[in-house]
Picture 1: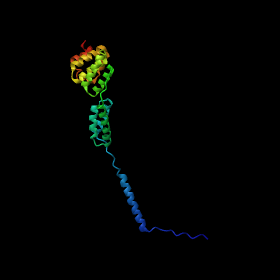
Picture 2: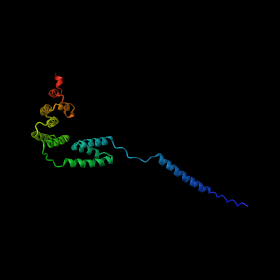
Picture 3: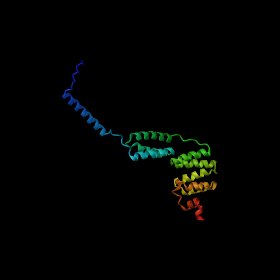
Amino acid sequence: MPPPKAKKLSRPKAITKSVAAKNGKQTNHQNDRAAKPAPSTPPPPKAQLMAFERAIGLLHKRNFREAKELFEKARQGPSREIASNAALQIRICEQRLTAPAPEPQSAEEHYNYAIALMNLRDLEPARRYLTAALQMDSRADHVHYAMGICLALSGDASGAYDSLRRAIELQPRNRMVARQDSDLDGIANQPRFSRLLYPERGQ
C-alpha cells in the first residue's frame, strides 16, 4: 500500500503578493540604478591640461622659470589631479631656480652653463659666461655661435652679426645651422644677415 501523499502547502496569497510587490520594487530600483550610471569625474578643462603639458616640455628643456609660470596656471584649474601634480612640479622648479650658481673652470663648462641660462632666457649672465669662455678659447666656433644667438635674443643685432660671422669663418657648417635656427627669426631677414646666411643669392 503506497504511503499517503504529503499535503501540498500553499503560501498565503497576501504574503505572496507582498513579496512579489517587494521584489518588484527592488527590481525597479535596480533598473533605475542601471539606467542612471554613477557620475564620473569630468575631464579637466583643455586650457589647464594644455598649460601643464607645455610646462612639462619647458621643464625638459631646463627652462625652469617659464615652466613654473605655466605650472602656476595649471594649478589653478579644477582638476585636482593636475593641480596636485603641478604643485609638485612648481617645487622642483623653485629648487632648480634657487640652486647656487656653479663655478665653471674650463671654457666648455662656461659654455654649457651659458646655454642653460639661455634656455631660461637669463641672457645677461649667459653673455658673461660666453665672454669668459671666449677669453679661454677664442677659436671655439660653437661658443661664437652661441654668443651670436644670445646677442640676437637680447636685441643686439650688430653684435649678433659679428659673432655669427666669426662662427661661420671658423666652421662653415654653422651657416647651415643658422639657417634653421628659430632663435634668429627676428633678424634673419635683415639684408646683412641674408647675405651672411645665403651668400649664393648675391651672386
